[in-house]
Length: 222
Image 1: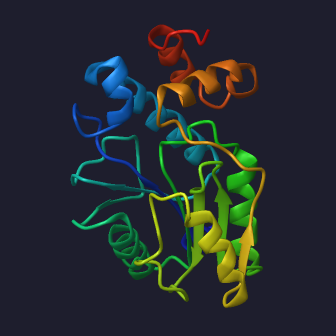
Image 2: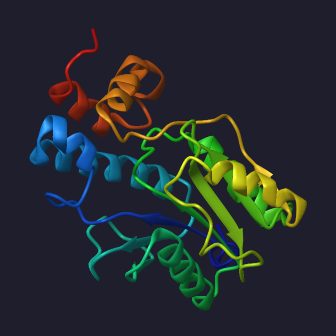
């Protein structure tokens, strides 16, 4: 990938440094804080490996000024505030670094197919949309991407609710938005973890670290 392409697009992983009491709190209630941290760490490693395999500059947007995942192009510290505020701040900092578009991901979907991220890259690089989004079956998003500078206000979108995907889809009436399917799912609860294990044959090459940790720590669904 040439230098002009590298400056054109980046992928941002929004992830907290794994620590007890800060990550996967719903899993921690049933499996314990230490296990929840191990699961989250594996999820981070898997999605980061997928990002790095795409040969696009990777930005780590985190809570501490430390490159705790291997070789990010930049480390950006998330500010205080709700997720909308943090996302908009990081996106604007990314634009200031010279990027023309950005895709945002989280560790919650370590099994996200490379093809979905690749499709988002293609759409933004070709200028086919100003916003791309891939929905989660809980009403949220597993991926969002933006042409920079931002053409849409994102700070007040209903992040971390089951309305987000619908609201983003409705933006089609005002902005050039493209929705990328199929719908995926987040790993937030023990039921989500059990679902990933049931479908592990499909995902074993995408998120091997996550599947291995879940197999050791998550009870089989009866």
